[in-house]
Length: 132
Image (tube, rainbow, N blue to C red; front, side):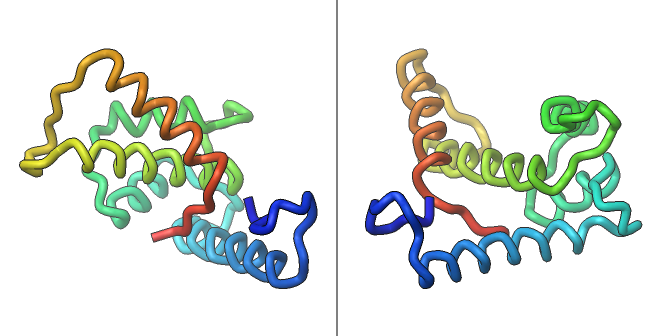
């Protein structure tokens, strides 16, 4: 992801970018880990997503917890938090491109849906995304 010149390694400048990327995400994570437990619980996740501008149902937050709680302990650890945020940010960007009237609703065909999913998957492996 940070090997900009595709040499298979990262040089010092690329490493500095990687270090900043991880540090930015860690600071973001820590700002929502209110009890300094080293993980994000349901309420901390809800606060983080609300701060990022998402207004989602408790049921959906439960689904997020279920999908990104790797150890099934009712919490999300740093690496899963980053994956969650990047995934949500990328999918939201794809949605917004199609929500031209900004009403929060889009109508798409199956092939367009598949295109969105595949493009999102490819974007997540190709480019870094920074915390908001």
